[in-house]
Amino acid sequence: MREITSQQQRVLDCIQVYIKKTGFPPTRADICRELGFKSPNSAETHLRALEKKDFITIESGASRGISIKNKADIHNRDEYPVIGLVAAGSPTLAEENIERTINCPKSFFDSNFDYFLKVKGLSMKNAGIMEDDLIAVKKTSEVKNGDIVIARLQDEVTVKFFKRKSSKIVELEPANEDFQNIVINLEQDELHIEGKSVGLLRKN
Amino acid sequence: MREITSQQQRVLDCIQVYIKKTGFPPTRADICRELGFKSPNSAETHLRALEKKDFITIESGASRGISIKNKADIHNRDEYPVIGLVAAGSPTLAEENIERTINCPKSFFDSNFDYFLKVKGLSMKNAGIMEDDLIAVKKTSEVKNGDIVIARLQDEVTVKFFKRKSSKIVELEPANEDFQNIVINLEQDELHIEGKSVGLLRKN
DNA sequence: TATTATACTGTATATATATTCAGTATTTTA
DNA sequence: TAAAATACTGAATATATATACAGTATAATA
Image (cartoon, rainbow over all chains, first blue to last red; front, side, top):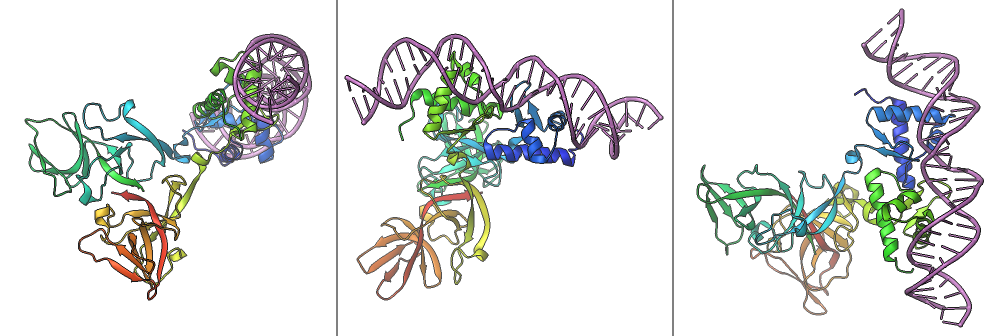
């Protein structure tokens, strides 16, 4: 794709500012007024160029039908689901498990994440993870020793430290003296790593 | 203000969804199409009701000139300073103590808050507060027993449980067996309550 | 009980708006 | 060097759109 020109950038900025100010996109005439053009066709041609270069979409026939693409960079925010640590049964991200959502910048934690997991129990209390805390979970199966992982054993979902003992043996280690390590022989038992913790959120 | 009706809520939702989908607000005709109305005036009257109740603004004469008010949830974001728990000396919110800022919705925690405090040490580890955790602090001196407070004793700033023993005696209680309670006789020593914890944020 | 708000259909219309066409001029690409 | 892209003015127009007006009917206030 060709580079954006400085005039096209001005037009794009103008659209962005206009939407932020009013809540809806400008007309061709609005753009002319803002940037000092004297013909609506000046705006039109710039818009068509921006459309061609994939910076915006224009809905044909619709008034103010301009939409800025790649809003990812601009509002880097999203709704993240909060999921209860369901003891048994349902798969983690099923609709019915979503308690609510939290609006949160995408780059809030140092790594991207996919959902919040609401913690049940105190098995990780020495790691500062308390009941009802919300763990920011990144869905991945690439975990290394010491990571706090969200693991599924049959139908049980649990949060523990990950420790690989050998090629066949993995230990899931709690952070609470009242709990036992869970030793998994990968040749006998199935271990599914849902993801790992990349952050934590607590509301008092 | 009167309550919103279920039909008005449907229209409001419709506008929200339309904007999210297309990037620009709907026309009266669009709303009719979405909700099954047969006359554009159906949409018009609902819009005027929503405007009167302050849920939206309508720019007169402009096409698609609808803007949803109370973007409080969406736009109510701010930069919150992150402050190191400076052992001695400087007042808490001084410029030079601000390590960085975090962009975060105003209503992120259940209560409003003023800044993030970066925790040093493990004196509150049994309360799930670990080194380098960020405590969301609400500046207030109204605290009650059991609150986690940010307290200043002379030049020392500390995070502890608050416990009032009598009119003159306050105890600051750590959550770690290796630490001692701090007993303060208000007639002899000066205790300044900077604020209390309303939440916690951790980045792994 | 009178009034206002809600919840619509249906028609009409001024105007707001996208969009095309005709030019001019400069710069960039093939 | 010809073609395409950029960067405009200016005028014209079909149509998209807001909005007023005329009704009907029911529920909620005062």
